[in-house]
Length: 284
Image (cartoon, rainbow, N blue to C red; front, side):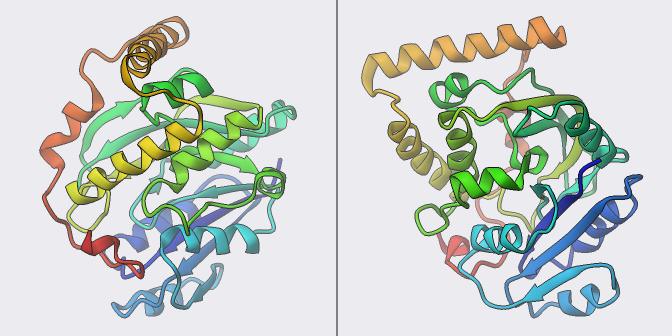
């Protein structure tokens, strides 16, 4: 069973960080490490981290959360690396399922799983259950259904492809990396189990409409770099690839999305949330 390095970037996340740490600490999997890369918090985060001697953590000013993710990947000693944000949590048994999948599929360069979107109180909003990694669907549809909190890759993949391009993107480095996996012909498997609770809340970036607007701008640039055309051809490919994704879900999971995820989540979005950033994401 491979050693899994869990990297958590954090900056003034005292409201949710303890729950994230506990969700890793209580996993029924023996071969893991948890690295917490803090951006210089002043909200009591450091005192919290000192309560957990098993953590491998640092605290210093960084160039944003993707830079923190890169520092964690570089420090990781595991064969497999993953990112768990400081407001998200693993569900029971998540790491055991991931470890077993890598053991049973040595040809996989990485894998991703399913997740549950929850609100600030941990109440379920909806479940995202996917079928498989498809590079064309991911780039043409404009829907990044591979959520990076459920993405686990062998560290050797970062040796080949590099790290997250934090100097080029504020909000979409994960989408860029996920597409680079397909571009490089990496073999990405899928674990059809709910691995993560992904939180939409007042203290996170995901629920901030300013952030999602910037994500749309950056994702257009990324898709163009991956050969997605503009105009009617791009619209046709988007329509086709979204239909293909639903067909794949029907074939492999026996279900389709009758209600788009964006509609399910929209009541949890806010004009502005409260979070900290060393690179101005909170001032978009």
